[in-house]
Length: 141
Image (cartoon, rainbow, N blue to C red; front, side, top):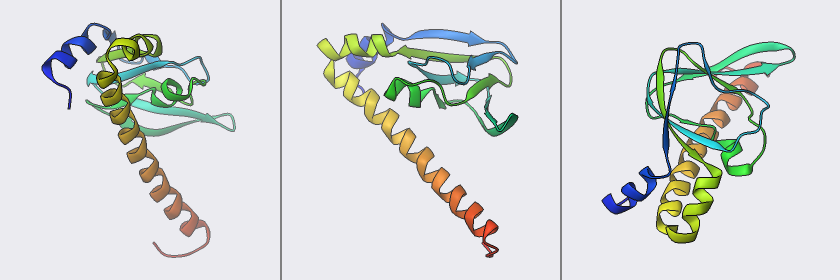
């Protein structure tokens, strides 16, 4: 949990962005490096697979977006489309790097939160994969 002083430090490097309904917050297979925290609104996570568009899930207030490319510096793995008007906090990798020099406690808290959210998503994916594999193999779930 960030102290009030640490929250103030973080607020100086975070920007607020708004997205209209239907607008892309993140576009699949593009350069990433931005972490978004959805302040308000809902988004859909969309993936193109074998030439088809698949909605993976919907997310709402508090959702963390863009975390994979933020952490590994790779391209974005899915598109995030605003389901309605949205407001999001945005943190860039460059801003986090600058904080690392003078505010390591803030960076530590941010990264632990990112890792916790990514771990939760991975656990959910493992569960979904297990259900899918059992279904394919003809076993009852």
